Image (cartoon, rainbow, N blue to C red; front, top):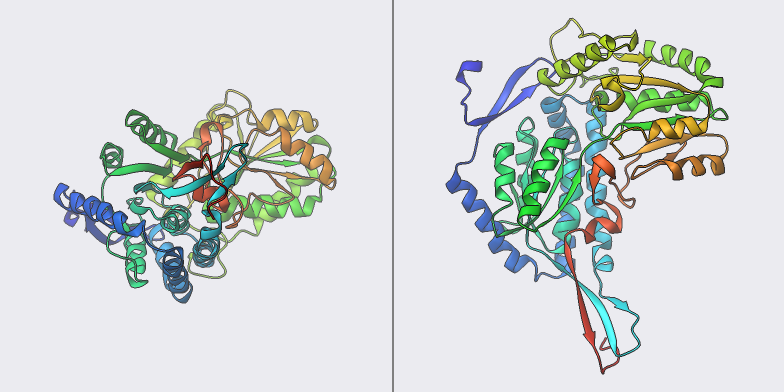
Length: 467
């Protein structure tokens, strides 16, 4: 079957059994030009639509997603392997984000008065134009939603280059927008290779670009955006610290750490990748982790009994296995797992890794799979130092029975988000984004709608408030 696949196509492959499900032709230059032209033409009209018209569209998209959540969830499971119940939760979250911006976008973008001693001044928030959004496969609907919802509500039009291994999910979102009544060109999916996305930034009709993905991909997009003086936002993954202080509820912390690390087969940018525990409770914590590991059930992601799904692809599982093997060569210890599971599909054993010292590749790398990295520290100061000993800075968690103490530790962590006694979470009203090597810019919350609008100053020097 492999021989029948065209070189100029993107493939949908089921990681549960590695079978090719569907293929789509990559767009040629003429087709791509047509998409960009439609987006540019649509912007000229869409930017003038009333907020209630835009809100109606987003509410309809949310409604369709909720009505078809089992179908959409099954498609995400088919293409990238996540547990079906997790996929349904992702669809529900996406619908909530569309509703959030539909409900609040007009308020967020209302003229904002400014204090000035002479006359009257205000900021008018105006859309930029055609935006390019480059998104990854690990949350095929949510990642799209984070950039689509605020920016379409703001009056921009969108071109999406989704990950090549989730083409059906990518196309389905365009279909849903059209079904919801979106004018042609407001939301379009692009079947193009990754390197083509960076080239597109040079097009004068594309005004800004957002990317969630790897550091190399982010560097390429940021370089192109800088060259052509265009706004960009980046979310480039993380190696989040999960700090457990000695006054924490150990059982709650263990449940959160293990469940969080195995969520989406460990393929989450904000997953608790480095579990940092104070020495006085480290042994107890580790023993409870081992018990929790014993209850993990690997299997069919469509089955409600399965708790660990396959990774997204053969390439993904091979890459994670290689990282673990390299870490062991450099002195780390595998307490549990560490190997490929002997069955069809992109499966890996849940893995518990310890004795990871500075200089070990695993100490600095992001491992995008079900690998639980355990660290002991003598006190909270050492915990903070270890948490900050990375170029990443996306999310993080602090578990403690003393909220004041936990907040004090959280303030010292160099990251974009810290949750107290909880995993790094996702809700429409809270900003999402990082610092350092994890990128820049924010999505969700009011902040998400201001990234790609022009905050235009309008000043009347001799008049009172004209409103």
